[in-house]
Length: 91
Image (cartoon, rainbow, N blue to C red):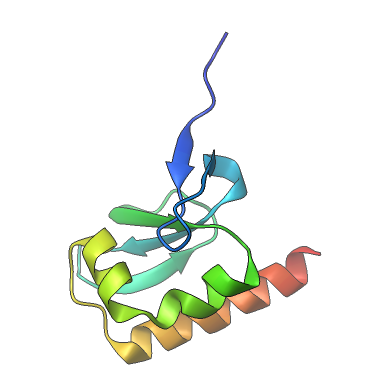
């Protein structure tokens, strides 16, 4: 039987099935983006879809540490909007 990959939300530190989490990725070019497919190349950070976690994506220190790169406020604002749009369309 195949094991389910588990990941931890970078905001609330809750461990969950990888497929239930949202992925933010630092691309090889150094850009920080939302990855709705979960398959983009680069270093990823996961977060759950709770409102508190999505809204705290703007916490530059936590995201930068998780992605091992400096994220800009503008990138994180865009990522937050993309995640919110994705969650609305998913319902």
